[in-house]
Length: 453
Image (tube, rainbow, N blue to C red; front, side, top):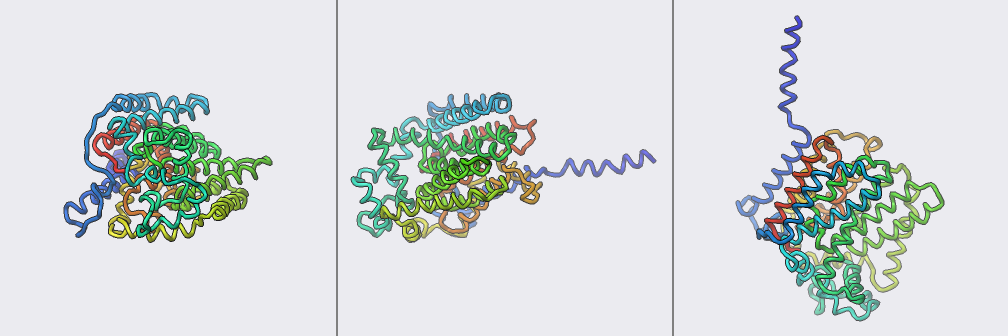
């Protein structure tokens, strides 16, 4: 009788072994989506031109093994070997500093695969970037007053593509750098990389304040070796990512503070997030991430002061001559005057998601699979999962809007950043293995492809 029972159990055990894990399922789906996106145009599956050099990426196949390779490999090996242990053992402040510093070295290593000129100077030297318009700004107040008049492609003195698609703060930031002696693409690129890299620190601060320090520490090495750094160094969108990430961190601090400072912190959070909207129109979609913070903290008290402060930013720019809603309306017209008018929505609405999977890396995708498989009511979800859920909502809204067709690997940096900590949901025993996969994926992409922004 005992033998019969034992035999009857064996098929069930083998069937469990043959079943794919949620992480493996997510990776399989992401891989299939990416393969479909790559093959849709060259194999004639889509019946049209999707208007990108290497769809679904804004990149060119251009292998390079520049001087940054030894640095990138050294950081990757050190991160895989010692990252998980150090993240658990070190004091919290040391974790923050080490995460930021390691991320900077990792990013510069990948950027310098194409040398100083190709990796640091070239991204901001592009004819469609902000630096082209810097010499045209003599008077900041006059620039704000006429800013919307130069958005449309039909304007005789229209802005570059980047400026037409963004509110004034990116341009004014580079004007400020120029005025203090840090003008030009080299200095601007270094400053953008250093500032943008602080976003990972903001993520860790947010998670810890919301009571998820364990996963914050587990996520730290993945935030260092994330493939997102390819577009963080060098990119103006990395600064936007940092601004919004620190706004979210301030909101988390405000939501978890019981002292009288809560009001000031809430106002500060609204101020920073409000400024984020004037770096990029799309940053209104940080709303779901902000809501996730309040859900995780189980309080709505910071909401009203934060909204008031954000509206104050809008009012201040309006008083200076720039009305955000008018800029947004003209942006939509300008978008369809350019490549946005010819890129096929039916392709990019889903191909964008394949880009997200590639940009956040295999570990984050596997973590997303585990999250989806173990999904519970939001009241039982961890802050890490809630924030990733807010970011996912933002990404879905952005791709459905039709105003994000291609180039999302840099445009969506502020959203994708919050998906990376999902790697912390993977078994701790396999952390080094997943870190090696993430680093290898990023190195492979950095070596083979030159991004066009």
